[in-house]
Length: 195
Length: 196
Image (cartoon, rainbow over all chains, first blue to last red):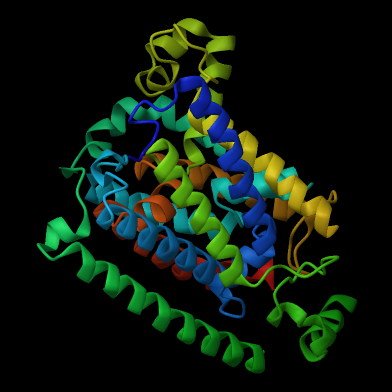
């Protein structure tokens, strides 16, 4: 029965080894997709290369279908997979700020690691910026703590909030993704011709 | 005087625009098809769920590293800071002995392996043709600071929230992901000089 770690199949040390191994796969596929390059990533926001959307949603759909089928088969206890608790308002604001940081700097934390590992100086400076920002964040944390912890909703999923079957939302995400992929390719072609 | 002319040449000549093709960085070998790379990424994420019962992440590793560094320089200050304290724990384990730190070290190794294999690993700055290296690096630094605030406010970044929470149909993750695109597209026009 999975998750294996939660069922005590192995201990903390082994989970750290797995962290490294899983990270290796993560970094490999990020770089394969071209996400070690800020220009490739930023292109998402200028519409001529929508790989960010395509890779992200292919990954989300793959993992989502995986946990769904494994759950239905009774092999994976989804309730033991960690969910980040929802704090809706700070997460909305955080998403906006992060989106701006993405276009200004060209990376997100994971991709900046992939970029600095392949020699991108801007990726290294970006990662350094994340460190500096984290330091400032830690210093101002006492003043914004109230906001960060506001609108607490606990560990909650979309099916629970909208009171809809899990399978229906999975189906909806797949449909949205496939429609999005076609739209993205169309947009890429158009903006490629225009400019 | 020459600058505008160069700009015009750039605009007219279409060979500047293999950017339509994947890989605007003139790589040694082309990037993978996005769906294939996405499938690989999704399977790694699924493996993390099945094996460890958690998803992937990145920003938490930065927090652990910063907490460790501050603790090295000013232990008392780090201990008294509520945010850093969360990453230092009770002091029985090393702050860097954290799941996300090991995972991010793996990301480095995996990305370097892929980059070397494809002949893409080299010291360079990723930027558009119109921006100087100094300005690009300044933007990278500023973007990193914004990213830190965004990720910490949201309790995760594109990996820990959008990817991981997206696949688990986490409410906050989907709200976050939507806003990342809103935030990005809303400033894209103002920043286009950096990329195009």
